[in-house]
Length: 201
Image 1 (tube, rainbow, N blue to C red):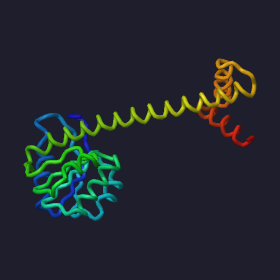
Image 2: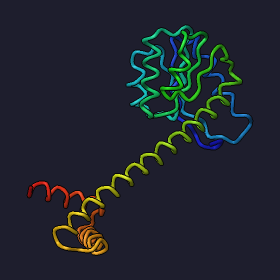
Image 3: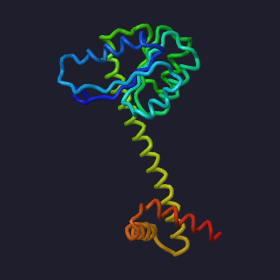
Image 4: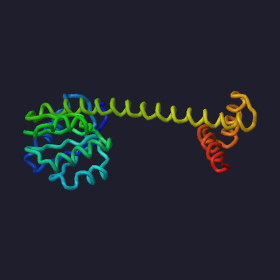
């Protein structure tokens, strides 16, 4: 990640609030050979979701002095979308805000700790956490898909075995051959078999 340029959207209520983050991002390379990051700054949070969607950043860094519930909710919704890593700096936060941030998937929530020298390390840690979490979600989704596919295939095999007096192996081979012939997944063929059986009923 050290040599990869990042697209970062910095959001805050005004230029004074975002200056420390901008300074930290501009000067926090640590002397490494790094291609310049693309940094966009927006003041105000009303169009944060739209700006993020248009820019497709690697990370959104939100700076809130004393966040109101509506602004926090907007940042949390952005984090829940999973579109990018979200880093939140705040001077103060209402009770329960940290727990809400964690539940929403905010990669880093820093209270009363915004200093330019800390911005880059916090951002890089947040990006690493976000990437690890996305990997876990992808693996979970793949496992769920595989389980759902297996259930479809088992049901389709049962239908073929009952209707055509096939062995389990022969039923599976029939599904596999149909999938190969049609250039489709076995699970898709299985779903077609199940759907056809329902229509016949």
